[in-house]
Image 1: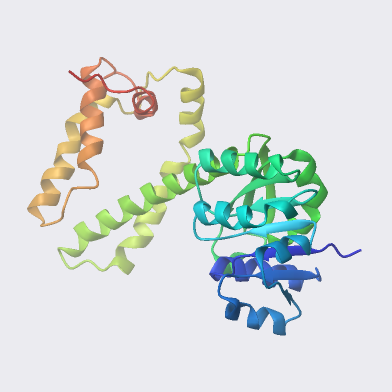
Image 2 (image 1 turned 45 degrees about the horizontal axis):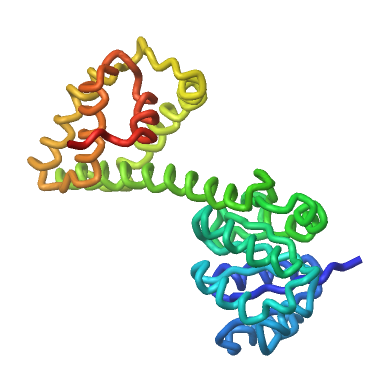
Length: 291
């Protein structure tokens, strides 16, 4: 039996979500502040709601994908009387605090709330490699898991509505850190005429080799035992200035890595020189002493 779903927000990602539901044979209602964006989806079989209240009333499952959570609060607030008995799955990027506040808004009106983090770009939606993280009401997630599975691999991470956002931001942090290092490395090499396409396979092989060590570092972090016989913080702090100096000599801004040098120096100054790099997690979660 086909389940009904409403998609609110028809940007690039929201449109991809609605198209995935239609492709899976779900009867789908769509709403967007600019109604014209719904035209293509209506032509593919979706129903267009004229108002947020109409969109929510149309289906038991409401998938929201707007630009920011402030907009989600505004839209749901205008249709609060229709939330009772509905499940709101919010796939808008935001913070854990925002997710928890939205959960309170929805549950106070008799609805159930699930927050989500989309670890994919729009063309990946409905493909096996798309991962979407969910947290919040377990009952609501289990009820609608089959429908949500049409968007990509659905992974539930906990009852706290803020957890999906936290996982999302944690994964994005790792991604941006990786890209930052890659962009800096390419900027360095191109100062001597080395093409990015020539250098990138070497970067990929090197990073793949380094990532093999992440499980071991995770074990160190969980145990709190950071002593290493591989590469100490003292050694890293001593060699890191070469990266900063060489960057400046090559005319490349070191701004992405100067803070990292400061963190290494702080770790050594606080007596952790014999530990491995994973010790930095403790410094990041401990406020620095200030005069």
